[in-house]
Image (cartoon, rainbow, N blue to C red; front, side, top):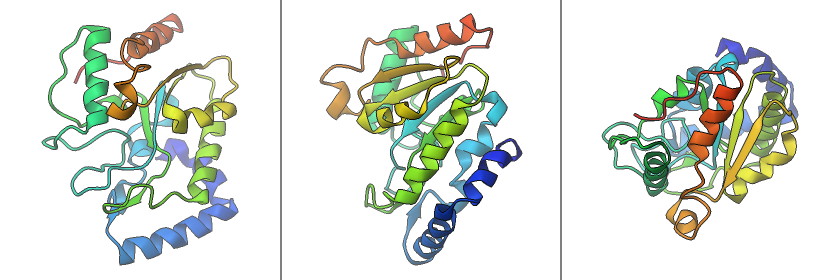
Length: 218
């Protein structure tokens, strides 16, 4: 995570950093928390600051055993695909004319410059949004402001009202914002997800700016 050192130095200096750390120390020692603490910052480990091309914001990690791996929407190989990821794959297939394998590990995207970040980096077992904390809200605000200052072309994919609230921190004209409903069945099956061509639009923007597009096929 050396490329993110500057960002984490900013975070470390904030008041919320200490209280978040104390909260997590307690939770990880007293509860079952996902993902494992070593994977909390997996998104930053796999995608360096200089390589960021796309940002996909999830809400909080999957909360059942064997799912959360520190990357938004991603599950380990061999794990049943969550409904949101099924819809993401459906749209990828329709948009790009590719065939997606039944494998939910999105590490291959992270290594290409897709920052797969959950706004709340942790969750208690079987308790969605149990780590909905002001400290994480402040962390995400600082992250969006930091990303907005980066010079390289970046596409922000804001899916659902939760992700769209971060749009107000994104002002850089060198970046592109693409919005949709959340890919969960609750949102996607009522319109506003399928047929938007988000992934081809992302790649067209990257290519137009001289950046290697994302190979979305797994």
